[in-house]
Image (cartoon, rainbow, N blue to C red; front, side, top):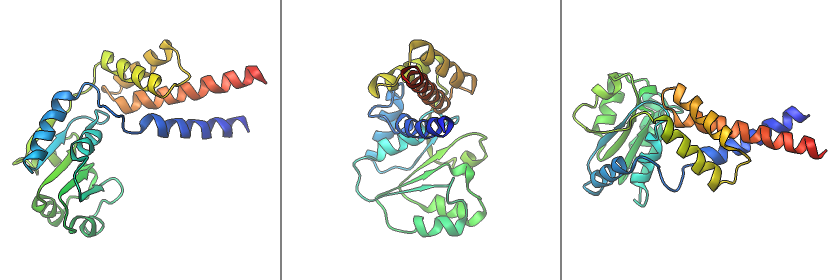
Length: 204
């Protein structure tokens, strides 16, 4: 029973911790450039390793626009699944996780035809090379110090039950996974849930 309780608590905490933050730390320059491109209704690629804030930046750049069409190629991977979502008129198209799509010729042509658009791409570079005519907003891997600050901000803002050692351990895990903030935040949520469980056991 305690394991079920902990699992449910972890899921609730994970949803809160992974929710888009009000401000994307250490991405000010990239966001400024993305907003410039959106302001000119230009298409571009947000490119970088997994867990570097690409989707958050793309959505932040499109925030406030009316008629944004968002599709995730993680859940709709084929031409037929994506076609119905992408053929609707939109002020801006946001195509997330493009490398996960089954990129047959007609799907590549469909994505190329969308204007204006933001396409989220991560390595390997093959998917980006299909869109090489587009400007690229680079999202580098986070440093260990940046990951620590991201975890501290999330812990403070959400009042998580964590200590500095939890923050450092979470940041280290993300750094060891290629500077991945998502991994760091998942570990932070896990440690917060475990701390709450220990506190509940002591009170029992």
